[in-house]
Length: 255
Image (cartoon, rainbow, N blue to C red; front, side):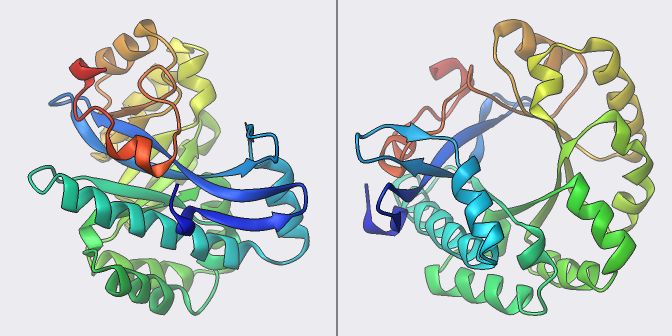
């Protein structure tokens, strides 16, 4: 694991960045990787980042955590592009309210892209539906900043989308959002009725959909049946360190 993916958090562990693949269902090839914060414990085990991120949020450190994760993600993306020059992929980074609402958002993201010599079209920013709704209600200027990033070909994803968020679609189309990512519990639970409703609503807008939470062949088949464009889930690839992700399969058939 490279030094850029490991950072001291407390005496009880370290922050690491793992990468999970997602695939394009239209051609069954690797679309990219999502950068995910994880907590590495002294015994070598890796746990979900809930406690770590809760502590960072309470300390007002989420902006800094997002920037460090972005740095890790772009370090990985530059390595992946060098190792696979004929395979165009993107890296996805989840952004918290703290960084999305910051006036420094554009400067910091574009600066990171330049520092790593990664083009904007290789970066996807995930903003949850909850944060998107909060921006609509309290920080409309944030969409000007996000638009400035899109002008540099950065992709904007509306993440953790559920049926309760269908009312956001007109605003998402106007911003514009580039892709919708479903809440993983929907696909993992094979909630066909809800997924069909969402598919019809989203596809009426012309926005592509990433079906997160694919945990079985049945989930993958459902994603195909409903016409979702991208897919992600433990069944297709678990989050791993950058070295492991670098050598992962470039197509679904290679899993």
